[in-house]
Image 1: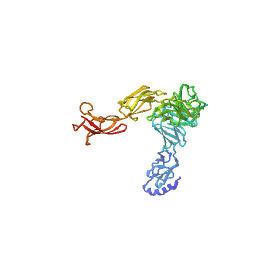
Image 2 (image 1 turned 135 degrees about the horizontal axis):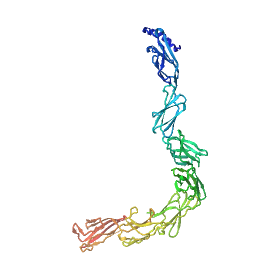
Image 3 (image 1 turned 180 degrees about the horizontal axis):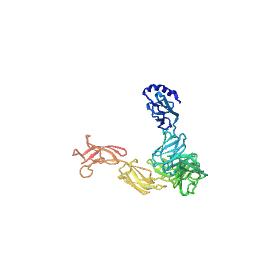
Image 4 (image 1 turned 60 degrees about the vertical axis):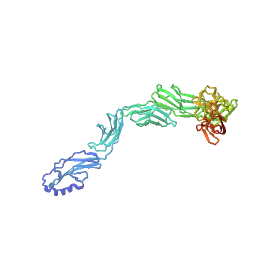
Length: 633
């Protein structure tokens, strides 16, 4: 008998003294079995089951190298192979024991290495990548499980696409299920649906950006067409919507595929290709060319859209179209082109934005949207637009011609598209203007036709108190105009107080006697497209006056019965009548007010009275009069 650590010898010497008074006269043979698994991972708890029939108080157990104990349960915390010994104290007859050698195997716990491969139609494949255990129990998380051996796999189909937790635990033969489990949460995948490509753009840096929709929640792969089929380029991440192909190959055909690893079935997107555009600068045009669609059925083609400087230049619905000659270019201007090709599936394939410096001998077109009008200060204001945005203008010239045919040229800042002519002599009107420019190729544009703003002239004498003033005007020449209106205003900053529609040329008169404004302005306006053009402005100044008699006869004969003034264009007025003692007997601020020869409701006596008038006209001129007035009855 091999008793480890002499624990049993100690028990033989000690126990007889402790149990000799119990009068045990029978002897039982040691025997026990295991009530638990003999194998498992640390910590492993084992339970023994006594089969000797001895009094439990006389039975002891030694588990491996541990001290004797009466408890039948013991936990091994370290890996190893262990024996279990049962000891029975038989008092006077000595003791008995039995050893079951190497009955317990304890292993170090190890997490199982496994992969979960999601497949279409809610199927998964659990692949064990391990040979440490004797078998592996797979719990699929839906009350279903499977057991497999080393490096084997098990397939399972879920009832829905709800998240599930897959747990794998290694098991030794006849061992306890106590080894460390490993879990992964997965989402089952529905049907295997091919991805959809929406846009492919070849970038200026040589890469290509793909935009797509992945219809199946599995890893996809980008593939390129070769002589032997399609080769993998890269994996496409689950849930992604864009991918950049590094160093993409122009005119190469690609696709994105997804594979069901359980059935090896493959679904692929529509084919797409990397497209580029070629530019060649010629003497008077840019040669723009591109390749015919590759790898896609001709029936899928919808159109090419050619973009120039971020604006659509033209569209081509003929699949055979492969380029144009763009003659709408100006020398030393950089133009950028891009081609977008559209297919019935919704796929758009876009080239890089390629640019080229153009050259040309073509005469530049004339400026656009020419506008001319007199300002309120008597200057002529011109404005226009250059025909090509961004075109470099070296010089711009405004040519002016008066009615005598005298020509003046004015060079202006090429960055400006306005000109104001302040050297106006109305006696030499009308003035007519033409505009041209020279571009970066030293080519001078066509000159615009001469345009001549409206000129209005007045005939008549404003110093007269009666009579008429006549106004005649010219038509606006060079640009179509309409809706001519003559305006009269007392201030150019105010709305006119009098307007009248007139013909494109004619005569307009005003009655001097009926004018209420000492100063007014006359001009003609006309519509020029969605803007308004004005003629020169004529200022009319009428003289003001204050006149009065030196006597009146308030005798009731209705002839010269009251005393007052005659005036025109007076805005402030005061008249006072004084008697010979200097007493004011009549006062009025009304320029039309009159004295009836009474004072304090009585007739004033005949005689001489002093009259004082202070008045101011509409232009601020002041009148002061002190005169003798004779009242005669």
